[in-house]
Image (cartoon, helix red, strand yellow):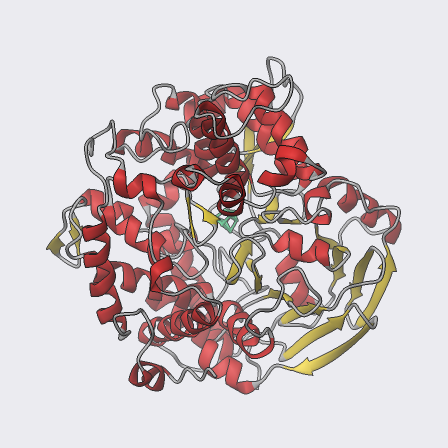
Amino acid sequence: MIEAYTNKLLMIDLSIESFEIISLPDILKQAYLGGKGFGAKLLVDKVFPGTDPLGPDNLLMFMTGPLTGTMAPAMRGCVVTKSPLTGIFLDSYFGGSFSPEIKYAGYDGIIIKGVAKKPCYIWIDDHRVEIRDAKDIWGTDALESNRLIKQEIGDESIKIAGIGQAGENQVRYALICCEYNRQAGRGGAGAVMGSKNLKAIAIRGTNSVKVNDPEGFARACEKAVKELADSPDVEAMRQAGTASAVDFANEAGLLPHKNYQNGTFAKSSNLAEKGQSKHLWLGSSACMGCPIRCSKIGAVRTGKYKGIVTDIVEYESAGLMGSNLDISDVRAVAHLVKLCDCYGMDSMSTGSVIGFAMEACEKGLIPPPEGIDLAFGNVPAAEYLIHAIAARREGLGKLLSHGVRLAAEKIGGNASDIAIHTKGLESPAWGPRGVSGMGLAYMTTDRGGCHQRGFPVGYELAGEWDNKPLDPLSPKGKAAMVASLQNHSAGTDTLVKCDFGSFGISTETYAQLFSAATGRQITSATLLETGERIWNLVRMYNLSEGMDATKDTLPRRFVEEPLPDGPAKGHRISKDDMDYMKLEYYKIRGWNEDGVPLEKTLERLGVHHD
Ligand code: SF4
């Protein structure tokens, strides 16, 4: 039967320089549908509690979904591993055309284990797999290595996922760069790749992905494209990408300023769509086959950083590398983000870490590096730290390369009070003090504080969820909303879709796309139940790594310091509010008061975990 899966996984062991092609187990397809679930189940089964994320036994998995490489709009790829930043489950998504190429080469996923004896890269040409010497490429940045590998193989059209110097040096928030401008950004998958002495994976595939019911699939694709075209949120993304969120967040008092001390930034418009279109943008671009085209390409056209070719400064980078550092010149922010891209380092975590260091210096918790004025607003100081972190040789750069949680622990004193993270993952650029449901989402997210596993902000500010009124500041009514959004996120993420696609594409349409592609008829309820299954499976994994209920919490700043500005001025998410939301959430999830899934919940969902 044609079913859109290739039914094969490529497993490569770098320690013994061997590979094997194994069948995709039916249980994975039945229970988990696609990439997120496949990765989660394999992590649970094969990466045991206590495994060193940067050791040979961690797995680095590049996963696709059944819709990857088809005409279904707005699909991406996903990396699953154990995070060196958080010590728990990590899934990180990337656009571009690397993941379709995995399918075209004949695999549903590539799983890497072991450690190569010397720097290498993997060359996959359909079913031919080579582990090649990377000594001439090691030490180059994430963009240059891409160019060099294409030159060595002699084919400009091959697809590459690789790391820069930050991944080689195992900075705990190093990313994996897919093509030139798409990244699996969060949680340090690039450091895992570096720990395996693996510079890149280059791939060429010559097969196509066949679907079970071509006519039904075409109809479902047409419906999805129409839903995208009809969505005002998608139109906003098409016009201005995520930069459209800067002014919105500022007006709502959610934009981080000076390490989240404030929720507004007087010069936010410079970082928003008008500032970016004036100084940077030249045109739009897209991941393979995506009609949304959220990306802007451009170049810095004036000033000190003139000439830098750049992608859009995404909302998260504008927030964390711009307003959070009190930097308002979007050209300077583009420069700092481009440095991170070249080194292969998550610009969100990097911005947060630099903001932490600037405040720590201001408060006398750390001395400034010699000759550097480590003050908010100082662009050269931020640039200095980016170089120092990526090189990770000594001093402050090395300290900050561990992320804010570990850096604060090593500094001691009150440093942890200003470290803005949940479970070790630096918080996104949406301060939650004016939207307590966002706070609950951070507290309970499967990979640490993240806005992409349920984003209730729009519902909270609109004051309505499920046809009932909702007070953004109150802890009431938040648990059911957050659990529901998380199930939706996990259930559709396992198809390896882009978050922006679900701004328009309905859950029913995702189910129709899946059904027509695979021949297995499912409904939107199947997707939501699969999401719930994955959520519980990952919860069990994270618990086995010591992430118990005490870690379902927020940074002290959000709990004890009232927001000093914006519409929610004076508000914080108190400990009582956190406890209220948490207990309600556990109950709705079918977990006990310690946040452990009850046996009957695991039984209902068919989650088996030792
Ligand atoms: S919406 Fe943007 S990031 Fe998502 S698939 Fe389309 S072009 Fe890529």
